[in-house]
Picture 1 (tube, helix red, strand yellow):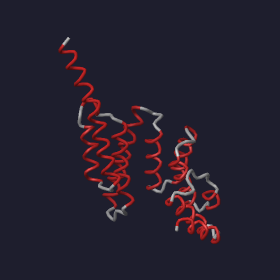
Picture 2 (cartoon, one colour; picture 1 turned 30 degrees about the horizontal axis):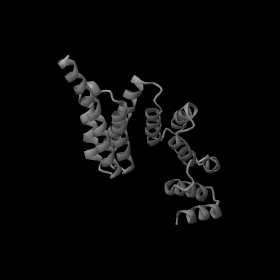
Picture 3 (cartoon, rainbow, N blue to C red; picture 1 turned 135 degrees about the vertical axis):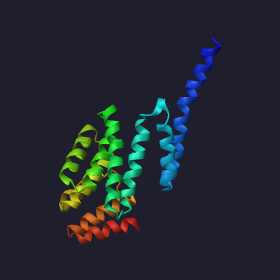
Picture 4 (cartoon, helix red, strand yellow; picture 1 turned 90 degrees about the vertical axis):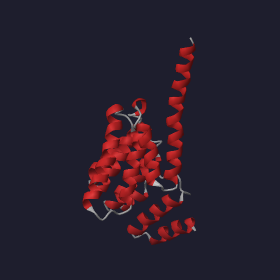
Length: 191
């Protein structure tokens, strides 16, 4: 009986530790400390019981995806980062083919590879799975802007009209569609 109680305590501890490392990793990522954040999630994945943790895999995929926004000049390095992110998202989908966060990540990688139609299709599937995922709406709007479908981008139903980042994207879409008055009004909301 004593052994069983010790085993239960150990199991609880094993379950709690990944959550703690995830929180610490998220703190690093929020401060744009990609390296330390990456190490926390890799630590979770290095343990046999949590080697397929979807949250950690997606977080690592997002770290690699984030490096693509930094404008990597080296094309080989950019491809490696794309492949690493894609690998993380695919691993999650192999274990749970309905994971919308992993699918959204794959859509982002396709967009970075300039496969805009394929990316839009992935985002549309995520949107069909749930309309309550605001990132996918924003990603679809970005694709519309890249495809020069500015009116479609502007008419997307954005989840937070008071979010500064969303307002800047909206102003950009107005500007590109030559709706300068609306672009100015949107930018004034930011200030």
